[in-house]
Image (cartoon, rainbow, N blue to C red; front, side):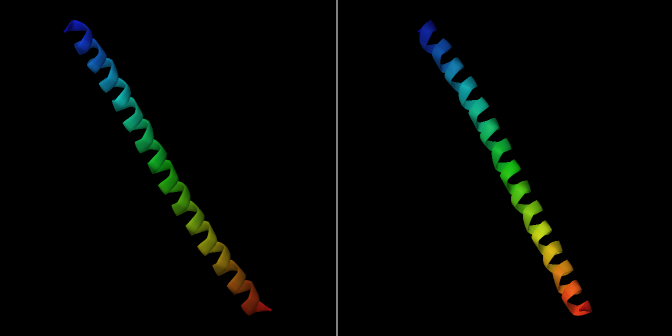
Length: 54
């Protein structure tokens, strides 16, 4: 019985670690996509402005 409890404790500990890492990866991906979309929007605004000046 004691071994089963130790195994469950280790398993849940690693499971929690995987969930935390997956959450951080998801947040990083979300921030990266948002930053790239903002950069694309700024670049398109700049190119439209330079085309109007010519």
